[in-house]
Length: 157
Image (tube, rainbow, N blue to C red):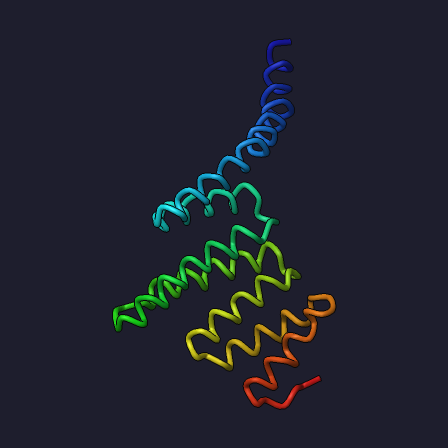
């Protein structure tokens, strides 16, 4: 009898408790992200965003914001002629994780495209804008077409 109760507690009740706990803690974590961001503590904000993406891997927002913070830092370092590749690679890794967990979310591909465009990597950017257009609904499905014109690339469509 004790074994059955233990099994029920461990395999039934505990997972529901964890789901409920994580569901309740996520809004608090978003508040902490906001506070850290506004205090300029970007590393702390990135830590909170990492935990949010762990709890809710199907929510693209945490990946998008985390990667944006990472590549924004890389862009600042780049503008100061300082080593920036590590931060840029962290952003790429974050985008890849987000794309793996949300393979048809157009926003993650679009945001990565913006990153590459900011670094002057038009070929990488246009590939991601194409994927973004493929998964998005109007009017966002025109991103590739608009960016192709901007970059003077003949559209494959």
